[in-house]
Each structure stands twice: as C-alpha cells, then as structure tokens.
Length: 623
Image (cartoon, rainbow, N blue to C red; front, side, top):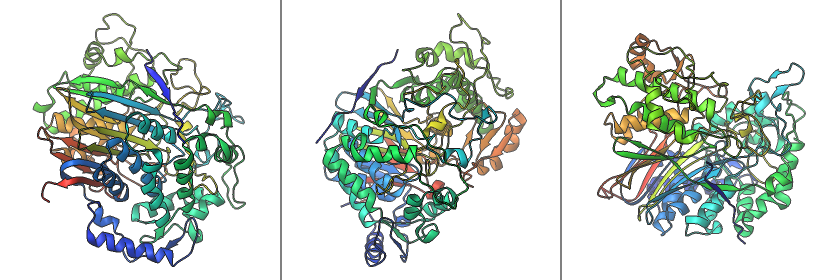
C-alpha cells in the first residue's frame, strides 16, 4: 500500500578556528577588490576550509555533520541561535548548493528523514525528481540502432536527462511541517555565503577539471565554473551572485517563484532548447520538461520503512527510494548470522552475499509505488529474509547475478526465484547531512543532482545546475520492470538516509552519497558499528566494498590490500573502485551522529574521502 500524501504549501557565533575566520575574511576582501561578476574568482593565500575539516566532534546541545565546513558552520549557527534540526538541515542544504553545487542544489531532489522527539515518530519526505509528462519510454534508445545509448558524458549532458526538481519543495515542506524558521530565514545564511564567496579547495578544483569539457559546452556554465576558460584555482574565491539572487527570490515569494513564473519558463527553455558553445562536440539533445511538470510537482509526505535488527529499529526511505527496503532486507538476512563471532573475512563475505541477495530483489520489485505495486511488507519481513538467507553459503560466494526471490511463493523454502532484472545505471555524486538538535530532534537528509555536475546545464542568470536524474530509469522499457520509464514517475533511487532507534529513542543517524553504493555504504557502516563493535568514527572510516549483484565486487584499494586474498578464497572477484567520470577510488562520503544514553553527541564525517568532511557540535565536551 502506498501511504503517501503530497505537500507543497505556498508561503508569501559558530565553532570556527580564529585562523580560519581571519583567512576567510582576507580571502573575501580580496574577492571584493577583484573581478566583479557571478563567478568572480581571485587568488587567496590559503584554504581556511582545511582548518575547519574536523572528522569527529563530541559534545552536547546539538550536532551537525556534512561534507563541507561552510555548510556545517551554517547549520551549527542555526542550532546555536535556537533553530531546530529541520531549520539547520535546510539552511545547511542551501549552503551545500553554494559550495557543493556539483552534488546538490535547487535543480535536483532528495529524501528527508525526520525523527520528532516530542512524538517519538519518524517522518519522511520524498523529494525525488519526476519524469516529464511528455517523456517517451524510449528516451534513452538510439533511434539509429534501436539499442540503448551508452551512459557516457554525451548522454547525461542533455535535456533528456533532466527531471522536475524536488529540492525547493522539500525545503518548504520540511519547514512548514516541522521547522521553526521560515524559508526566508533558513535561506539567509546561504544567500550571504553565495555573495561573499567560498575558497576553492582541491576537491572542488578536481571535480571541475574532470567535467571541464561538459561545462565548456554551455556558455552559462563555463562563465561561472570555468573563469578564464580554466577550473578555478585552489585557494581562489568563487562567488555566485546569481544563486544569491535566486535564493532571494525564493525567500520573498516561496516556491511558487520556482515552480511557476519567469524562473520556471527559463528552466524549461534551457531543457527544451539547450544553448551550447559552437566549439563543443557534445550533441546535447533537447529534453521534455514543461511548465505543467513544474507547476504540478509535489513533495510527498510518507511513512518510513522500518526493520527490527537485533535490539534496534532501523528507519529509512520507502519507495521511490530503494534505500530503506534494500538496507532493511540485507539487515534481516544478516540477522540470521552471528556476525560478531566471525573473523573479518567471514564477516565481509556474509555482508557481500546479503547485499547481492537484497539487490536482486531491489531490481525485481522496487519502483515508484504510484506506478508499481511494490511488495514492501514482504521484502522487509523476517520470513522472506529467512528464505533468502538460506541461499547464503557461509563457505563460498554464489555465482552472480543471483536471482530475485519469489514474493508470491507460499513457503518458498530456500529456492523460489524469478528472472534477474536489468542492470543498475545510478550515478555516484550526491551529498548527505546529519543534524541533531538540543531537544533530540534528528534529521538525516540525502540530496543530489545525480552525476557530478548534473546535466552540466546551468540556468543562465540563476546560478544553479539542473539535474540529470532521469538516467536512473532503466534504459530499455519492459512492462515487468518496476523502474521502466513512465510520465510523471519518480526514477528508483538508492539514497538511504537512515535513523536508528533503540527502545524508542534515537541512537544513530547516518547516510551517504554514492549512487547505488549508498546502500552498501550505509549497510556496511551499520554492521561495522552494531555488530563488529567499531566506534562510529572507525565504522564510517573503514575501507568499503560494494556488491550490487554483479559478477565482481567494487572495493576501495585499502580493502583489497587488507582482505583481497581472503575474499578471493571465498570466490569473490574484487576490482578497484572508481567511475567513468572521475578518477576517485573512494566509495561514498558519509556523515553520522551517534546519540549516547547521557545525551552525549558524537558527530562524525569522512576523514579523507572527498577531501574530508566537517563535524561540529554546539558545546564541545572538552570546551
């Protein structure tokens, strides 16, 4: 059953090192004396964000963790000024739209999970993008050959891939439902950040460089992100006055100004009539987004998934995301084994095999429940998990892909399966944030524009990139495929913002970017902590591997070095991580906050992945 309702209501001093504050002020002043424009970039002496990238912070009164210190600082300031977790999450997400524009922003979508301390209930918002009403089911098939296009930069850099954005509606819905700030107040810090600028770090520079050919295809994108024709230099200051003006527009008029009016018309024009440089070789076909698609968009309030795992209740996102169901099913499978009593290799073998089984069922059954009858209760049941767990050989890896389980079978004792589903096409670039306030409210929020840089198309004069989320649909249409293209449908996602309760009280919140490796990152971090006894910082930082029901296991080099021979002895084939658009060998860039029995908060972020994150608390334990 689809327990969802729509909601898009209409509405007319942080803990930063002194050295970082001084350097930032100097850099901003230098920018003010330099070139004036939406993307003005000038040289600065140092990157103050490095001083703010603290992977672990312990204390009381509230906590936040994001991949970016500017965003964490914004959220922490909201908490310190009396805002709640929802207020801080929206403010930090808007800041990420400035400093992490290739991963998130108002041109994309995401999933928002909220624990309400007063009621003890968990709520969620599905802010996933939707397919335009005119999108054909063969949108990703080459008419010249009748075969799917390869998912290369040529295809994802297009209007075809752009879905109706859901992020602004998510922000407004969250604030209307549970926040104490208005949208105007929540956007103010990010608006100021966009105007004064931020210092470019190595990660931002490298992400720009890896997408330079795509960005150069669009004059508006190149003007902002390729100043002088080159990626902004490390240490330079990048300002986005156009985005600040867009935030001002939303602050004054609410999301009506995004889903209608001039801005909506401009987004439609960018998608339907892409303006490209005469020097580009990219074809950039037009897409299908229309004014009616934008006017009709709704963020959906819906029930979370929940799985009881040992002494815990694990809450996540229901479809259209597959995160909650797949993490939950894998946990249910693993619950039948004593992971704590295994050696490392045996534990990893069980984790990988459970992941493959759950991914098989994800592919066969999970899609947008407005279009697909998703057997969610069965997928999350202990009985179904037991039927799947009996296929897990403790001594040997199964041949992949494994077949999905038969959810319609009666007493399917270890073996009732159906045919495997289509392969996964989800991309890796997303961002995540975790917030806990002083009253015990918790937000876990994953948001994205899909690939690093999204579609590559920036809305001229508006300062934000449009997503390419529709590439998450299956490339070839099949009636039995739950992720087939259909007008108005939300493509299946792997985003898995997760909140863990014990005895009705929150003990942990976590999430990650990484495309379909989001599921495995969240799952591995959970079992590292809950079963293997790792402190949450160690559980999050540990080397990762992802088995998504494929012939080989994607693994970080550190994991291969430590466990490769032992896992190969089980029959696993390990290949180093990385993707076709970047050279990164990292899986995910997670954030988490652990809530202790005494209210002690441990906020953690990545110590190294994607340049390291920033964990902050309102009142440090050692302060």
